[in-house]
Each structure stands twice: as structure tokens, then as C-alpha cells.
Figure 1 (spheres, rainbow, N blue to C red):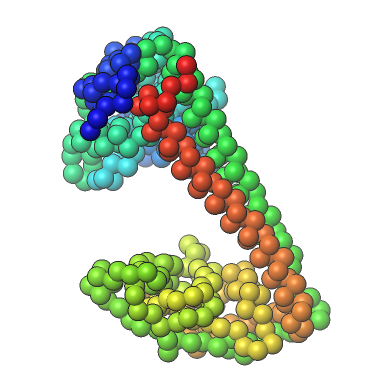
Figure 2: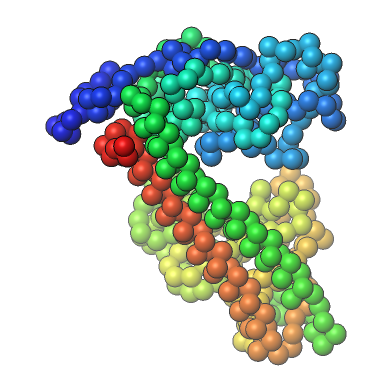
Amino acid sequence: MELSQGHRQSEVREIPDTWEVVTIGEFITDFRGGASLRPSDFTNAGVKVLPKGGVGRKGWLHVEVADQKFCSVDYAASHQRNQVDETYTIVVLRDLVPSGPSIGLIVQIKDPETYVLAQGVYGFRLKSGIDPRYLVHLSNTRWYRDLVNSIMVGSTQVHITNTAFKRIEIPLPPTLAEQEVIAEALSDADALIEALEQLIAKKRLIKQGVMQELLKPKETWIEKELGEVAYCLDTLRVPLNDSQRATMKGDFPYCGANGILDYINDYRIYDTVILIAEDGGYFDQYLTRPIAYRMSGKFWVNNHAHILKSKPGYDQDFLFYSLVHKNITSAISSGTRAKLNRSALNKITLNLPDELSEQKFISNVLNDIDNEIHTLEEETIKLQLIKKGMMQQLLTGRIRLV
């Protein structure tokens, strides 16, 4: 492949003539590994433990409050060499998943905080001359991900040795100023994406509150069994085994209880319907609400999802939201696999307005919120693609910002 003007083929990839190739280890001044924490070492409060799960692709350490674990102050005091704070950059060098999805990922700690590292997570300080944010963004590139996966060892539990990590060669702009400009541009993109994700989360909470209020039974509402207000079209289902499903290719979605699984050229349904899980792992963790989908167009449904269509006089979207909101614990049979039989499905009771216009008003309000969330999700995907393109251009020096 012809090189871009002013570029050369380095040991790692095509880079500008003025860029260097360095090893990560050249810039590390202090390197710390995780403590061998046993279950008995964890406490309800004390010093926070930094787990592998807190290291992701967003550049900052993030541990959900419910997932945060602690060790005692005494344990932390006896493991000073396993402690890090916001002055350290964090990397994962061990992964329990054979494909190593988190291997080599690098993040920073955003707030002043002290942590005890869990096993598999390492912290390091850097010399002046390299921006840690540059390393963070580099660790998310396809090139770097392929590289770290090529040097990891192990089978069920994969890892990269400390020495191998320090020997990783990376392209580096010659000045700290250029690194900072690249890091700032990519961090700004991350901030926009994070802001959209937070807005989506907020809108989803608002939707839950609105659903709670709008679907609360009113005095004038009536109670109906699902079989009275919707047709169950399970005769349209076509069971498929794994080998058949593996060979399906085409243009139209094939739908099981967990959504679109594949694409096919043949189909059985050309309509707008509700799909609701019949069995398996397709209910929420408390076995109270099934996962339901609204589908339209050409698609094929297997025998793990019921097919529902509203009867005349009933708004299908209102039925959909009612089912999503409904607690159906009593309708689900217990056993090795949770199951929602057709007979039990038809007997699920729903409270709804007698007037179709009121049903439509409620479903329109909820549809408007869903459409707004969908628009925000599409914007997020576009921004993620833009950022991916920026990384490809900026971290290879194809576009220079200084």
C-alpha cells in the first residue's frame, strides 16, 4: 500500500516521519499489581477495591455503587504496594473471558480516591513527556486491541505478563502538546457521547414514572383478560433447530424470544404484532415481567415467543405498554425453565379504558417518549462512529492538529 506523503512505515504501523515508536515501559516510573484478596478480606465499608469490572472503554474508572467492594483499613495498610490513587493510570492484564475483551484496556481515575487493586488490575505512574489520556485512547483502537490479543497467553484465564505489557511498542507524537491536542479532541467526543447516554438514562427514568402514572387503573377503567382483547397467533410460529438457524441468511429478520437473531429470505408474517417471551431466560431476573417487542414487516417467529395482535376496539400499543408494565409472576410456571403457557397468557388480566380514544391517547404519550429516546440513541451511535473515525485519523497522524 502506498504511504501517505510525509509518512513512513514504522515497526508498528504507518506514522508521520516526525513521530517516534516507543515502548510503554520507557515512560513507567512506578508499577503496582493487585492484592490477593480472599472472600474473607472484603468488608462492608473501608477502603475501596478496584476491580477489573471498573475498567471499560470510556476512559475513566467506573464502578457501579451496587458493585463496589471494600477491604478494611488494616488490610489496606498492610498492602501499601497494592494501593493506587488518581495519580496512577490503570490497566487490566488478566481476564477470565478467553477472548480477553478487557485485556490491555487503560483508564484513569477521575476523582481523588484511594483504592486497593484487585488481582489482574495494575496501576502505573508515567514520566513527563507522555499524556496518559493519549494512552487511554490508544488502548481502544482496533490496532492496539489486536496487538494485545496476540501477546496474551492462557486458555480459560488469559493474561499478559508485566514484562510483555511494558515492551508494547506504540506510535507517539514528538511533543507533549500534540499528544494533548489529540487527547482533548477525543475526550471532547467522549464527553458528548457520555452526555447523550446520561440524557437517555434520564429519559428512561421519566418514561417509567409516566408509565406508572398513566397505566394506574382509574375508577372508570374495566378489567379484561388478555384473550378477550388480543388474538394469540401462535399457529404462525415455525420451530427451528440450531443447525437450521445457523444456515439462515437473507434480508428479513428471524425473531425469537430475545429479538432478532438472524436474517432469512422466507417469512411467515407480514404485519404489526407484539412478541412476548414464552420460556427460557427471557424474563427479568425476578420472573415478573417478560421481554416484549413490537414487530412490523416481514419476519419469522420461532416457538419460544407468543404472537399477539389486538382485537378490534383495542389499541395494540396500549396493550404492549400494559404488558411491559404488568407483573405476571402468577402466570409463569416454575421448573427448570420458566414458562408462560398460552392458556396462562390468555388469562392475564389488564386494566384499560373502555374508550379506544383514551387508550390511544395514553399510548401516544408513551410512544412520543420512546421516539425521543430512539432519536437520542441514533445520535449516540452516530457520535460513536464519528469518534471511531477520529481515532483512526488522529492516532495514526493522518490528520495533524498542530
